[in-house]
Length: 142
Length: 142
DNA sequence: TTTCAAATGCAACATTGTTGCAAATATAGT
DNA sequence: ACTATATTTGCAACAATGTTGCATTTGAAA
Image (cartoon, rainbow over all chains, first blue to last red; front, side, top):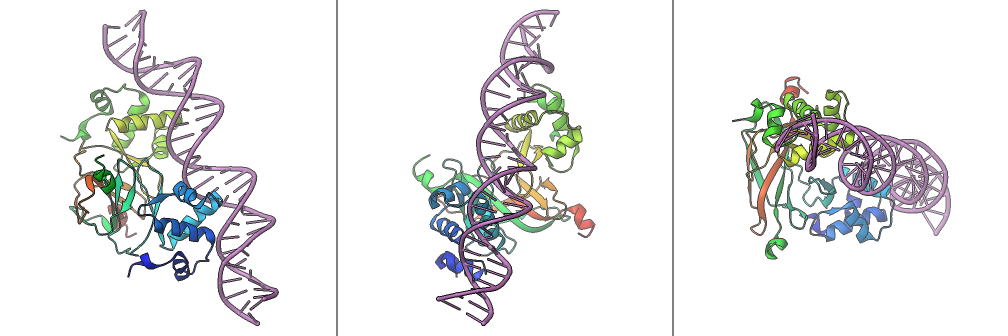
C-alpha cells in the first residue's frame, strides 16, 4: 500500500492541503528522484520560480503533514525525501550518505536495534545515519 | 583509559595544538558538563570573551583533531561534546536527545546493529540519534 | 630572549531561515 | 459559474550561523 502510486495532487488532497503549484512541484520533483534532494536542487529542477520564503513555508507545511521528511547530514545541505511509509512507529528512518557523491537515500528495509541503553532514558524514536559508498559509486569503483 | 582524567592542557599538548585560552576554555567548559553544549552555551559559560570567528575556528580545529565532535539534531543548535573514547572504528556514536529539556548526551555504552542493508551499499560508519526523555526529566515525570 | 608560524580580532560577506503585511489565489457554498 | 473567505504567496526586512582576508598578537621552540 505504498504511496509511490499516489500523485502529488492526491497526497495533498488526502492531507486536506490546498493544491498549489509550488507544493505540487516540490512533491513531484522529489517523487521522481531516487535520492533525497536539497532546497536548491529542487528549485533548479523546477526552474527557479517561487520565492524562497514560499519554498521554506511549503517544506514546513509538507513536513508537518507527514508528506516529507527532512534529512540532516553534517556538512551537507538539508535534504528532503517523501515519506513513503507513514511509519512513525518509533523505529524511525535509516539513511545512507555516500561520501563519494554525497547522495542521501532512505534505506526503507533497514532495521536496527540498540543495546545497553541506560534504563533511566526513555526511547521513543531512533534514527540511523549510515555513512559509506552508494551503489552507483561502488559500481564505478570510487 | 578514558580521557576524563586529562586536562584541557594535556589534551592540547597530546594533539600538538597550541595551548590558547580560547581552546582551553572551550575544552574545560565541555568537560565539566555532563551534556553536549551549543556554541552560545559555551560562550555564556566563558563570559563571552573571544570573537565569534575565533570560536568557530577553535571548534573546527578541535574537531579536526578529534578532541570534540559535533552533534546535529534537527531544529536544535549544533552542539559539541568531548570525544572520550577516540573510537572512530566504524561504529560511530549513539546520542540521546530529550524532547522535554532538549539536552543531548552521548550514550557511550550503547551498541547497535543494522540489518538488511542492500549489499550494493558500503557501510563505513553508522550513527544513531535516539529521541526520548532523559533521566532527569523522567525522574521529574515530564 | 628572539624568532616565526600559528592564532586572534575585526570587517565584510555568504547562506539559511523567519516574520509582517499587502496582494493573489484555491476551494467551499451558493 | 460566481462569490466569499481563509490560505497562500511575494516582497522587504531581519536574524542566526558560519566563512574569508588581512593586519596584529601570541605561544613555544631554539
